[in-house]
Image (cartoon, rainbow, N blue to C red; front, side, top):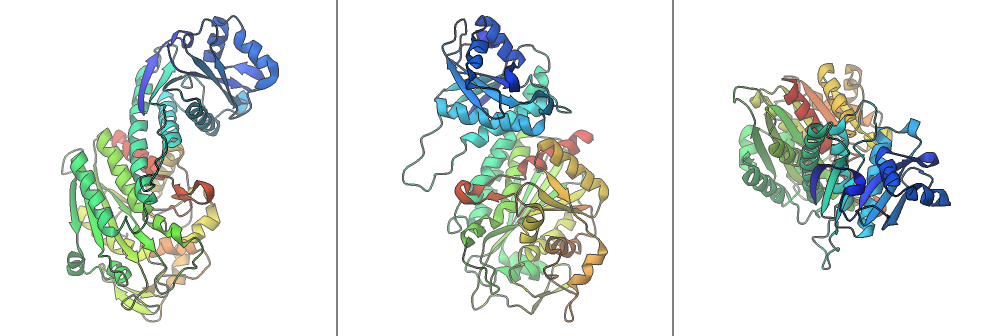
Length: 496
C-alpha cells in the first residue's frame, strides 16, 4: 500500500473513493459539507433517509453522486462532536479502512486530517491514518497453502482542502509509514511458529535487517556467552536442543562519542515453562514469548528508515525454555554475568533470567538510558488487561518521557511502583536472591528482580504480556510497543 498527501477540493478528485466524516445528528464535516454543496444537497438528502445518523464507526457508501468526480463517496460516522478525541479519531480511521477494503476500491482519498483532535496536530493525525491503513491490510498467510486475496486498496492519499499544515501532514505520514513497517516485521516474527522462528532464525532476522538497513550486527554464540559468564541466560537454554543467541544491533545516527539508547528485548522463542511446565491449554501462544525481541527489531527497522540523530543499540537475547534431562531444576542456583547468584525457584520465571545478563551486558555501551521490553508476567495481564503495558523505572524523568511517548503514540502504558519494600519478597536462604517473589505483586517483584541488574544507568522496563498479542478469533501479534519505542526515540532525538 502506497501513501501520499494531497491538497485538493474533495468534489474535484478523480478517485475510486473519497472518504469524509459525519458527526451524530447528521452534522457534516467540512469536506462532507463541500461534497453536499457540490451535489446541491444530495448528501444531506440521502442522510435524511435515515440510513446513517453519524453513530461512531458507522459507514455508508454512496455511488455516482452528481457533480462528484470520484466513483464513490464513503461517509464515516464520527459520533458526537463534543466527545470527538484521540480514541474516536483512531476508531473512525479503522472503520474507514475496513469499509474501504470491502468496496474493492484501488485508491482512496481521506479527508480526516481536517477533523479537530484536542492537543494533536496534523502530523499526529496523518501518522494514525497510516497506521490504521496498515493494520487493516495486514495479513499473515505465508504458511498457508492457499494465500488470502491481496487487498485491492493500493494507494491512499491523506487530503486537505488547503495547504495549511501540508508539511506537518507529510512528516506524520513518513513516520507512520516507517512505524507501520516496523510493526509488520514485529508481527511477522511473532506470528511465525516456534519450529520456524527458532533462536537461530531470530538471529538471522537481525543479520538480514542489518544488511537491508546498514545496521552493524554482531551475534554472540553460546561459547561467547560462556566466556562472559552469562550463567543466568544460559541456565534457561539448557533443556533445549536449539542453541541460544544474543544479537547486538547498532544504529548510528550521530557522533560515535554520543552515548546510545539501549533497547533490550526478551526473545524466548517458545516457553514451555521448563521443568515448572505450563498447563497445555493455550500453550501454543507461548510462541509469542519473543515479541519483546521482535519489537526491538521492528523499532530499529523504523528508526533506520527515519534516520533520527541519535545512536541506538538493540540487544536481543534469545533461546527456548524446554524441559529435558539437562534442564534447570527448581532449587538450582546460578551465577549471573554481574556476579550475583540466583536461586531458581520456578523455571517458568525465565524471561527475567535472560534479561538479567543482557542488562549487565548493556553496561559496556555506557548508555544514556536502557529500556527492556518483555512479555514477562501473567500478573501484569491480571492488573492491566490488554489495553496498556506495565511501566517500571528507576528514574522519574525517564518514566515521564516514556509516559509522554505512550500518550502521543496511543500505545499506552501505566506506571507501577518499584519500591524497595517489594525487594523483601525475593529473599533467598541459599543465594543472593530468588527469581520469584510469590503470587502477590508478581509483575512488581519481577521488575524488582530486573532492577538489581540495572543500577548503573537510567532504566525502564515495559511488561507487554497483555499487549503483545491477541487471543481468540483475532489471534496474532499486535506489533506493540513499536509505536511507543519509535516515538520515544524520535522525541529524544528532537529534544537535542
